[in-house]
Image 1 (cartoon, helix red, strand yellow):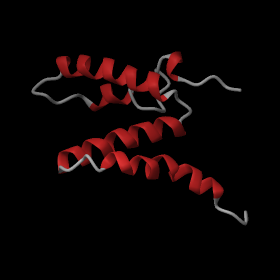
Image 2 (cartoon, helix red, strand yellow):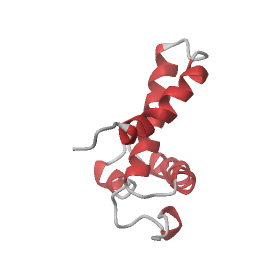
Image 3 (tube, one colour):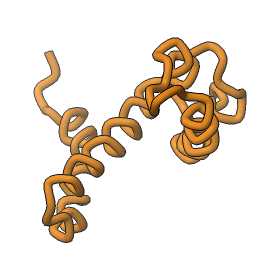
Image 4 (cartoon, one colour):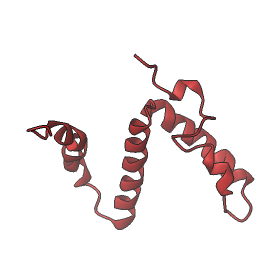
Amino acid sequence: VPIDNSASERSIRPFTIGRKNFVMINTVKGAKASAIIYSIVQTAKLNNLSTYYYLDYLLTELPKLCAKAKKGNIDTASLDQLLPWSETLPENCRKPRR
């Protein structure tokens, strides 16, 4: 068992630094939107994805799915291909292995 908790401190560091920016979020909708984006970014990092290219891919593909959706409901099978662990993600979203 490691004697220090440096790994856990490093993992929460971006969030604690970002708190200063979160002061500007003074609505419930803003807080929810921020939490969604933060969750997407952290999940992408855990799945060894380039967060910039993954977010770019999501913001490109989601409007296409919304246009195809009936009554504003996107089919969950269509969303499965956009998840961070999907095998169908483009290669530029994946970080190269060292």
